[in-house]
Image (cartoon, rainbow, N blue to C red; front, side, top):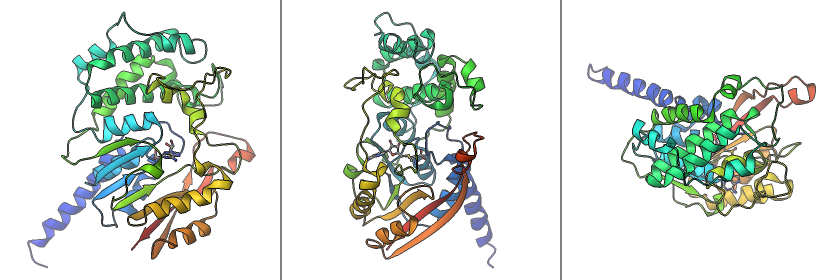
Length: 361
Ligand SMILES: C[S@@+](CC[C@H](N)C(=O)[O-])C[C@H]1O[C@@H](n2cnc3c(N)ncnc32)[C@H](O)[C@@H]1O
């Protein structure tokens, strides 16, 4: 081997290590179906594919979009939930606009003109009056900032709220359930303290790369075509229970627009928002939805995340994707969900097989 070749190989290897390290530094956001734990595996597979632009059509916590950005790709994040958009806009598409100490002081400064929506609506339902006041107050101060910084501050409020809320979901008022062990430290902190921590955590991973990333909010069926790779991670039809994101996360979804234009179901104890339909959640509509999604993005490399406890079965999805792509590869990964449960019924659901279906050519 020529003496000059060796350093190049070493350099590439180190660069790849850094990609994953950088992606894994992404702050954890408690969201059902987040692929944070699967990131090394997803990275391993995606790094074998040749592409420079990517659409993350169901971006959720944004962790896969951030992996793609870390890999040097130009990323479009998309989700139909507004809080996911704010994470995409404030953290991933953001070209280096951090929330500085003076910014944070401005954001948290008492504002006599604040509306009291959170305090009035959610008092006695979620959080302490002090925490709710903090959210009202911070919202009142947001207008002084650029759109990117506003999104970043909203993302930090959302992450803080998810951390503080028992089990990370907003289905039960004043949830005093003793069955969780995942947030005791967070429960003792105020929302303001958790917000400040989240600002630091996001600031630490935001960086400028001069690429024209975009963050969108909308249905995956309306997201732009044309990316060289499209990553699809829709909700799956659950075997039991349901998987409604609005039911679990209505509070942070409302918070991300300060409930402007939001339709609260007044009769609900937790003041939840009206459910948002997605065809991926129902047996009757899921198959056609996958078909429509593959057809829409047929000119891109397709990467679909899927798991063994979903519907339809894997071979059906492979056949469906094969209608649009000449080559469909299936990668498997055993993934253990840490829901901290002891019941035999739920244990069944703890270990699931995760799949990545990759359609090329
Ligand atoms: C399994 S999660 C995605 C998780 C994400 N990949 C992550 O690692 O955090 C599914 C996401 O799809 C979004 N979603 C569901 N139906 C949608 C639709 N029709 N269009 C756009 N987003 C949708 C939900 O809001 C949710 O954030």
